[in-house]
Image (cartoon, rainbow, N blue to C red):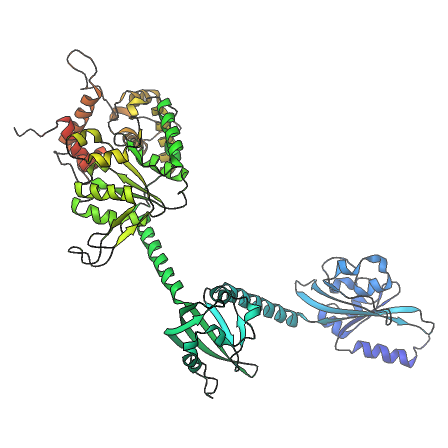
Length: 604
C-alpha cells in the first residue's frame, strides 16, 4: 500500500483541524474530507459523508449544487441564480465566493459566507476542490437590525410634525428634517452646514445662544422655551416659535437638538381640533340614527318625480323646502340631496326645531358667548358654524319662534350672524334644507310665520307624497323592513302572508313610512314562523265607515287613529309611554295635528 507524501498528510491534518467548516470533493463530486468544524456546523458525521455525493444535505433542505460543485462543473447552474450575493470567478486564483441564507436540514436558517478553491497537481490539473463555510448569521442579523433601525429613525424624523434641527459646537446645522424644510421654506441640502442663526430672528440671537450651553461642562437637561423666541424663514418672514433644546453627545462630539414649532400652526391646529371635537359631539348625538338614502324604497311614479327633482337641485346651493306629513322620509331625502351635492365631503348638520325650547333655539342655531345668559359658562358654537362648508337641515321648521325666524332670514340673505350675547359678525357658507309637515302658507296668513322668510325658503319646494298616495310601494317597503329586522334579530322569515299584506295595503297609514317600519319591526319580534303574520294588529275599517257604509275620509281616519291612541294612553302626550311615542311623532307635532283636526279631551 502506497503511503501518502508527508506534505499531503500535513495538508489533510491542517484541513481536519481548521476552525472553519471545510469539506473537500474529488473530481467526481465525492466527499474526501469532512472536517470537525463541518461536523459541528451541519450535525453530520464524517464517516457518513466520506465517499458520498450527499454533501448538499449539510446545508440545504433539497438537492442542489454547492459552490464546490460549480467550480468542478459550471454547467450545473448559474452562480447569481443560486446565491443571494454571488462573487465573480477569480481567474487568477480560480476561486469562487458567495454569501447566502442556507435553510439547514435541522430547521435553522444560517447566513454562510462560502468560498471554494481548486487543489491542483504538479501539471496544473484540478484533482479536488475545497469549500469553506463561515457562519455570519449573528453579524448579518445585527446589520439588518441596524439598517432597519436607521430606516425607522429616518421615517420617524421625516414624518415628525415639528421641525427638528441639530447643530454642532460651531452652531452649524447638521440635521434638518422635512418639517423644518416646510416651516422654514428651505431645502435641507441648502440649510445643512449653514449657521443656525440664519434661521433665528436677529433680535433673538443673544437669547438663543444662551440655550446652547456648549461652554458648560455639565450636560444640561432638555430645556423647553414656550414663548419669547422668534424664528425667520428663508424668505425673511419672522414668526413666533416654541422650542425644546436637548444636549446630545455622540462619538465624542457635542451637539444640540432643537425641536421647534410655529406657534401660529399650533393655534390653527387647536382651532381645528376644537372644530373636530364639536363635529364629533354632534355626530355622537345622531350616531344611532340610520340615514341611508338607499332606504327610500319606492317604485311609484310619484316618488320617481321626487327623486328627479332632488337630483336636479342637489348640485346647486339653492335652499330646498321639503313638504310632507310626518314619516314620509323628509330627512332621508335631505341626506340624499346632501350626498349628491358638491358639499358631500363636508358635514350635514340636523336641527329639530320642535324638540328645542323656544328660549334655547337661537343659542342652538347661532351659538352664544360666555355669560350671555344664566348657565352660559363658556362660549359655544352654534349649528350654523358647525355646518360651515356643508349643509344644515332645519327639521320641523314651522315650529321656529318669530325671533329666530328673523335671524334665519338674515343668514339666508347675508350668510352672516352674531352669537347670542356677542357683537362679532360671523360669516358662514352653508346650504340650507328646511323640512316641515305644516302648511306654511296658512301659517303666513295666520301670522305664525314670516312671509319674507317663507318666500325666501320656498324657492324649490319638494312635496313628498303620503304613503296612502303610493300604495304600490307598501309591499316593497314591508318586505324591505322585514329583511332588515329579520337579519337584525337573527330570524329566518321568508315572506309576509297574503292576508297580512292585503291588510297593510288597506290601512290609511297616518304615520306613513315610519309607522309601517314600526309595525313590521313589532311583527318580526312577535313572529314564531317563517311567514310573517300581522294578525289583528291592523283593522283600520272597523270604525272608519260612516252611517251609509262608505269609507271615511283620510282626515277622519287619522283623527280616529289619534283619538284611540290618546284614549289608550289616558291622554298623556309626552313621555316614553305617551301617545306621541306610540305614534312615533314629535309631541309638538302631535299637538299641532290635534289642533288642526279639532281633537280635544272631553271633560264630562
